[in-house]
Image (cartoon, rainbow, N blue to C red; front, side, top):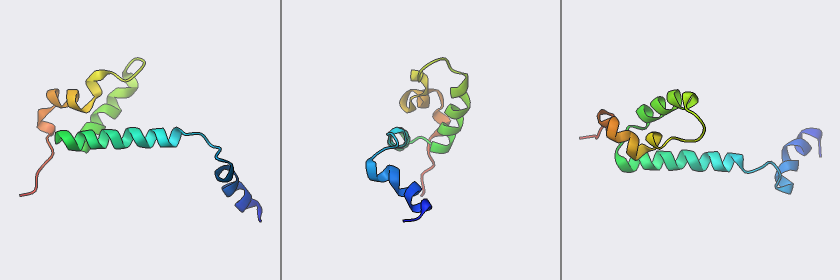
Length: 82
C-alpha cells in the first residue's frame, strides 16, 4: 500500500473524521425540503439568508426559517411550469 492509499483510506477504515459533514448535509437537505414544501424559490431564499446570517447574533433566528421567511417574502414563490 502506497503513502497516498494510506492517507486516503486510513480515516475511513477506523471511522474517524467526525460527523460534521453529515450534520451539514442534513441541514442543507432539511432547508431544501422545507423550501420545496412551501413553494419557495430556493435560490432566492439561500441568497437572502446567507447574506444576513453573518450579521446575526448567536444562533439561528426563527425569522430565517423557511416558513417564517416566506411570510415576509411572498414574491419568492417558486415558478411553476405550465
